[in-house]
Length: 318
Image (cartoon, rainbow, N blue to C red):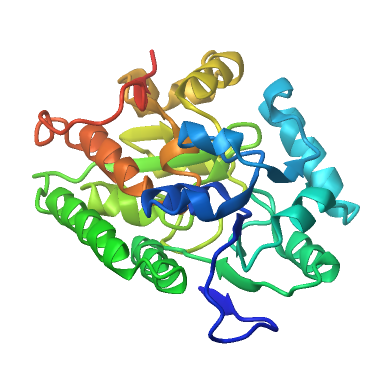
């Protein structure tokens, strides 16, 4: 996790915040500090009121109109050409006049990254404080709540939020299945990508044996041969940025009738699930703990019958 303070009076209180990532926006609302939020990104859609905030970041990729393969092709082309995936709305960032910008360094594909922060600093007369999130596990996600709470003087609220998150994590970890099932999480469908960062830890805490990826490592390309060799009992489809229904749609178009895909025991046994990755898995947010609870219901349904999770947060694929 990275924290940088740029030219600014050390005693200057934070009154105006700009968020460069959805998980930070969600957290600001959870703190009850939404009146301090003067700019968000095109992906900041939760809670609903976040959509009314001025946009300071937009994407050059319209992923709603592209397939998984097309999104990957366009993204790779932009990266290879060293072009930005996200663009800064200069008029809105100047009007926002932030004391604090919350950004991230975890993934240059998933949200606004270092380039946009540097551009913002260059055009702003008053140099803001920069807090850059780079969590790779659940502990670091929770620690970021404490740190942001301290920066915006919401330490008591941060303590309440994190204590509840820890309680929920410990509740899930209390239950250990008699036999650990092998679980493979897939973060992209065409091409296949592993689900990295905090997801392997979530699978472990939910009672599964995580396959292929490791806790804290970045996502990477994955071959069908690797998937077959890992012999997963459960497969969880969580394409980055997709909700449950978009995932089901992509799965049905690309994988459902695939010859090699249907060799897999998890597919034959109807143990393939789609989850709302956009809300609960793709971002290092406080809602990631809801993602842990979703995994617990998938991996250990007998132990978590009475655990409530949001409607349509996961579906069993047929």
